Length: 150
Image 1 (tube, one colour):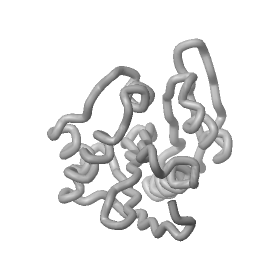
Image 2 (image 1 turned 90 degrees about the horizontal axis):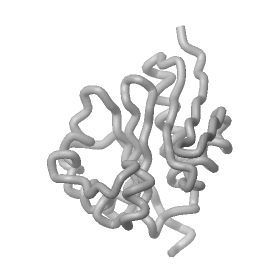
Image 3 (image 1 turned 90 degrees about the vertical axis):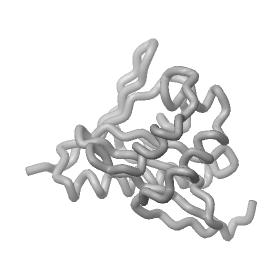
Image 4 (image 1 turned 135 degrees about the vertical axis):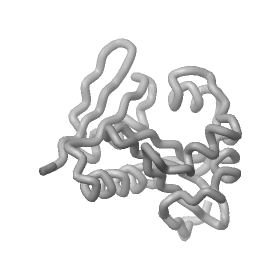
């Protein structure tokens, strides 16, 4: 992979659902388990819901016409993140989370949070790097970042 990878981060559009479905179809069973806490394949309807807005805001990372990452922030401050296996460990996930934090601040949310499994070391690393308070138990890891809200 080239170090000159050009990545565009933008709000998801309704036409992106097919590329988001392709992104999720690139994930292994283990990746899907870490994302959904179960072995779940994204359906066409779920891909369309990701881009629909409403109770959430979705950012995509796009390179060479392909969506290589997706982050969704829900109205309660919870967010979810997926990065294509071939594009991990180069900062895309961190950049998406930073953009979701910016959006949360714009929306005057008091904090952002994530839930993940203890085996999801990349998500836990991103949380620690960005200053989240991390609480771990046997079944779940909770990350919380307090924001200044009014």
